[in-house]
Amino acid sequence: MSETALSSPPAREVIRARPSGFFSDMASVSSRALRLLPRDLEAIIPAMLIPLFFLVVTIGAIQNLAGDVISDIDYKAFQLPVAIMTAVTGMSRANALVIDISEGYFDRLLMTPVNRYALLLGLMVADFTLFVVMAIPVIALGFAIGVGFGATGVVGLVVFVLFGALWGLAFTGFPYAIALRTGNPGAVNSSFLLFFPFMFLTTAWVSRDVMTDWLAAITWFNPMTYALEGMRSLFSGWDGWALGRALLAIAVVGILAQSLAFRALRGRIRRG
Amino acid sequence: MRISHWSLVASLAVPSAISARGLRRTYGEVVAVDSLDLEVAAGEIYGFLGPNGAGKSTVVRMLCTLASMTAGSASVAGFDVATEGDQVRLSIGVALQDAALDGKLTGRETLTLQGRYYGLERGAIATRIEELAPLLEMDAIDRRVSTYSGGMKRRLDLAAALMHNPDVLFLDEPTTGLDPISRAVVWEQIRRLNRELGMTIFLTTQYLEEADALTHRVGILNEGRLVAEGAPDELKRTVGSDVVVARVAGDPEAAAAAIGKVPGVSHIEVYGNEVSAATGDGASVVSPVAVALSAAGVEVSDLSIHPTTLDDVFLELTGARIEVEE
Image (cartoon, rainbow over all chains, first blue to last red; front, top):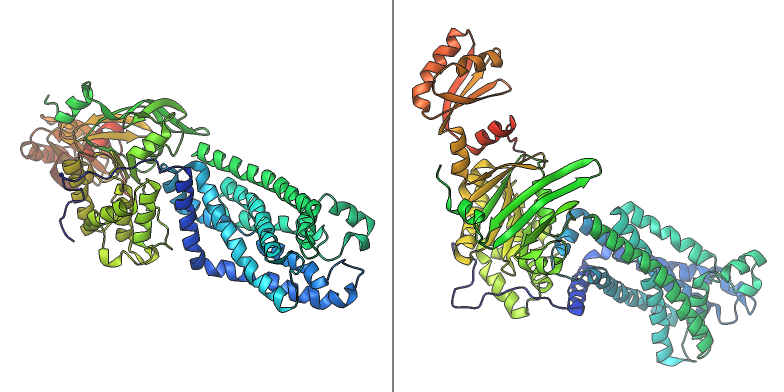
């Protein structure tokens, strides 16, 4: 090993730290998370395959029964938003965050001047990117089986993916809150349980008209119902009311979940 | 008594790089750090010496803004730790006890990201990586950190802490678990950083020779309290220049009583089956000690003299030895 000095030569200006600003901090944190995504494929690939599997199986099982009774649009199109929601709901970098906490990397970040909120928002940028990527095979399969966005075109397709990714992003608050509060990977994985009431107590498989009264009543209180209805509306044309309700539902889930996440972040920083 | 340069600097109105008053941290009922006062002058290498669980790491975590203080106040690089955390974090570099690295990143990615966290531009990051090359194994810098040895990880961790040329560098047990060669490299670089950049270095260690060899001043911490502070030589002189150690097979208290009657010995301590006594001249008292033990009928398995170490100071102050855990 050489004996060269670690310092800059005296004649040169010594390189010093400086505050880089919130957005630069967020970009730094997200660049690491994005860089690690392709190195974490063992966690991502199964999550990409499961919605494809359910899309095929559900359509295969129910499409012939559906006709005009179960849904007011083609049943394959009816199911496509469900597949997107299955892909993105509960996915996040929360498990990676738990590893950072347990291995001390999170402490390293806390000892840098990086903005505290950027630590979480940077991860969410990576999550959002991942959700868009995860939507691609689902959409591709949809196209392959004949689902199209003839009524709203490419813009409708973009909005469709955007709504799915926004829903996923809103939902990330739950696993992040658990990760920051517990630092326990098992607890983070259990946040997936939240997926079931959101997904099953809604119009995921049939429209509200053909449900039993009690289940139909519950769907009115499930924000995912409105997110699904908004996304489905894009197959029939531009429906501002449906899209607005979908955005509002996503916002409600987002505000609730992200409030929990940022509260947990502040708690962890305070506890030290 | 001679006072070291750094003891004098710390006592004068010279700007402190680190200052703490009444620092206290509790975890529930457990008091980890209690009533700690500290002054570390700019450009000083200050060592915190103590056994595992003494509270060394807790102090570092509080000074680095990672843990809050239960009571007291502290400033680092002139900024209040409690209210000016952002400024403190811009001014410090930290390598904690366990190298906090992401195994899925390469060494270069680790350093690049670290540079970005401190607002360095791309060119500055490349320059710093080049400057830090002596600490790194450049042929491995593009390999994933998960493939690094323990020593390589510690040195990468240290390099990451130095990316932004901090004013104050905190090193929490920087050489624990390192092989002797890596330890020597880290020691050399710590000296260079201090000598050439005037960097203030606050290090914790459980290695006596490390504190002795590297630091200008040492604070000895035991059960969360600072029990002594000063230049290593000053502290050792408070005990004596030599220590006579007798390992006995019989009753150590009887041995201590016998040794205590020998003229020229002081500070007699019993630790297990070992009795130690400080003296100004070990060579002249070792024979009388042997005679006294024999006359008292104490069976001696080993009798030795060694120059006073910081461990002897610790024993004198606390009645225990520093048990080093790898």
